[in-house]
Image 1: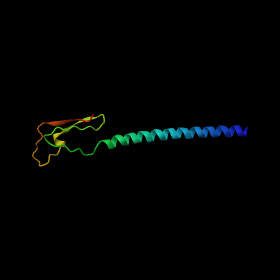
Image 2 (image 1 turned 90 degrees about the vertical axis):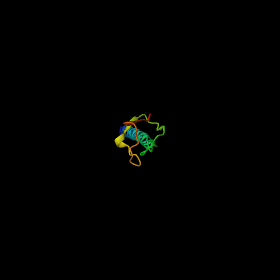
Image 3 (image 1 turned 180 degrees about the horizontal axis):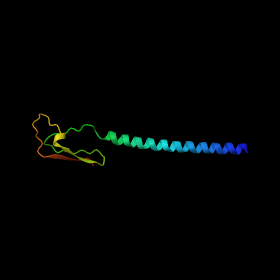
Image 4 (image 1 turned 90 degrees about the horizontal axis):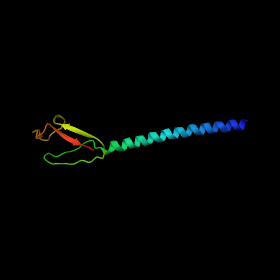
Length: 89
């Protein structure tokens, strides 16, 4: 009888360890995917005036850069439109 009880306790411990490993694996996978997506987008994007440039960052996002948010070198304000549309998708 003691042997059966020990066997059941070991199985319960084994199940708990497997659940813990499953949770840790899911957390590690989601963390690595988040890090991979975060590191694929550069923190600074340099654009040249009067040139068409295409950025492919392989992330499903889009955005707009407004005149107030864009610093133009030389301070002459040579942005011709109210905002610049940037499609990151």
